[in-house]
Length: 380
Length: 243
Image (tube, rainbow over all chains, first blue to last red; front, side, top):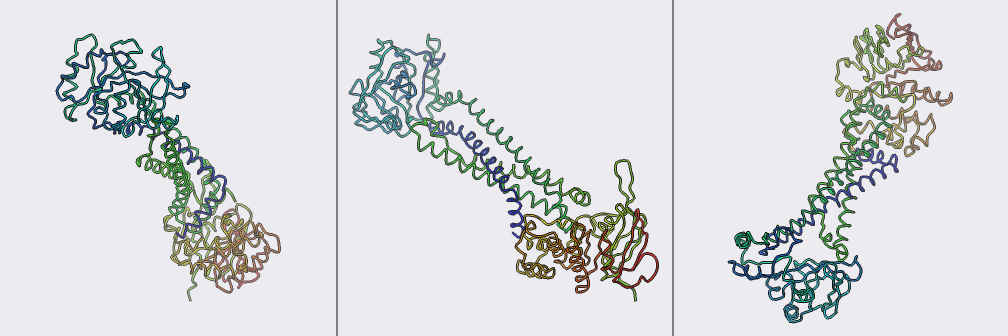
């Protein structure tokens, strides 16, 4: 503690330089923390579905290819199946293209059994089953566009050459994607002219341990048919969607590390400049009797303080921003799920310590190893 | 009675390699300075004055020969050992003061005491005493930039004496000062020598310094060219190397 005053006085020797270095480290760690936290949205989504008993069955050739609606009856005969709901993607637009949110059509009969974790009220389920133009909307979409139960909503077709006008009969929440809208598939079928194909068939089994056997049975039933199926647990199904973002996630992480490395080099240069300016003082302190290791500790302490201060500010800013994302999740959609996990916080603080240490260790070691006579002569 | 020597140089040589050239900074120099003396080392540039000072202060090592300071041989000491020894026994005064600009006068003087186990209160007492001894008790919270050259040098002297060292080593202490300030500094050194019996070794070009010291050692091209009695001090006991 007796060296604290010396450390702080040297830190504020050049207030502007110290402040700019702290800010640059803070900015780099802010960017790093945000970018490295982005992949947590995938973890969040996959974590929620890990224990699900739902299976997604679709065309083996890809989601772009439908499967016959007749498959539903055959799947009903598979052991352990509790509920089946066929689904077709509508992908309509509400108002402007920028107002898009996920919307799809499902069979209404077992929607409450299939998605029992979506907190759909009994009254809403009854209305959904009763009214052909009924729809259920996610709470975020409702909040975003100020929609209420009882209102009508029109979606302009993009994949389909027609629009649909729907009556809001309830909301979905809980584990439901917060921006979803689901309406009845029979309404879509009628408008589309009864094509008899669906994009995906959701199957719910009785227990998680029966998921694998149900998957095998379903796909075996349609092997060698004109539309072979591939069935996946909900976790795997969602994980495959996340796979398309994986490159983006990796790039985000890589970019985060590059930013940190770049700023680390700048901080190292700043530390080297600062230590170089004080060569004479360092020589004077050594001639007074300060051991080299004490001076080394003082120099590294200064640099560590700068690094850790910048790191804490950057992490706090990143945490605050991601918190704001979650509060304003209406607009942020799935990215409202981005959180800063403790591992990222610890990693960012660790990096700030590393920046502080590494930027000073080389110039400080060089300064304290320099011959005292030569160092005194240099500036005298 | 055997004279106790504060500084005992025995056949000291110091050679430097500068690229392919070998520079003889000191060549077989033998000097013995009794305790409590105020001596000056004088000579033209390049004569080896500062080299002698650096060897006394333990911030340089002789190529050959023996150096003992305060009765302790420092020739074979390792760097870490020498740092601790310097902190206890040597007070250094530089030509250009070499105060830390971000520290106040008080904090500059306190710097050597940070290496001791003194409490904060004890350190404060020592610093105040040192600043009082150099006449700057009322400037303790001034930064070096707020002091005159003479005042800065007095702060540097306070820093040199605050640990009560065995020897004060001053390298051109008046080199950067006007005549009046230079005289004040020399008088201060004399006071320290008289009042506190500090052994003071001063390298200087200043011819006025002869009036303040006991003995003058003259160097020329690394060789001891002569030893003279200062205008102030006792006569030389024998011709040659000691006072």
